Image (cartoon, rainbow, N blue to C red; front, side):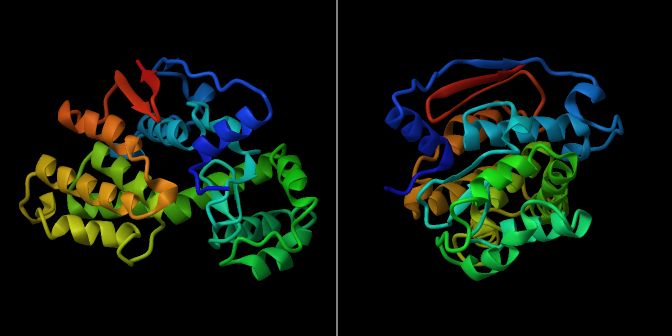
Length: 279
């Protein structure tokens, strides 16, 4: 199977099953209550604001799952053929890249008798590979079963925040960028990982800094974010799994060109040719 991003892989799977991948403009009203979004009702700045964080999750979900309903993805699990083994959950935890292992370890700390605990030795053995050894045939079904529990869903939320969201927002604030920049950092860290090599988040930041100063060092925010998105696109183009750069070109770049540094609705964007709207 060619290397695909999971939204594209899902379309391929639907086609193979004879199903129709429905491409529509998905519309979501902004300003739901804290109860409907799962937000605590607390206020914050930038992506710390629960409403803005929810927007960030929807934007990522549009690219990862061709949907704005990120809360429907806890049970998602599939090997999308990208060399990272199983990809699963709300942020694409992978059996080959340590974050799925970290998640299941956290879940098992909180619920030692959970249905995934028995797979921990296998997850440790396949980490760093695309192997399913010790996981098939039951792991995917067990993941979906686990996703019915509030404990596992909360563990996914917490591990997403610990490994990706909180570090990305903290680094963005350190660099002096606002809500859109914080989202750009978060999306990059989700896709490329938090490492320091040239194709990881750290390498993208270094490449951007070579072309523009961060606002915290006196640089212009728009100029710097354009440099960051340029560096992000370059990194994506180096990997077949990420060669479609529309989650930057027809989403984040659109917001930046509009001067929407606060990521305020209405938001109108496209990913992989699909149209989305938060109003």
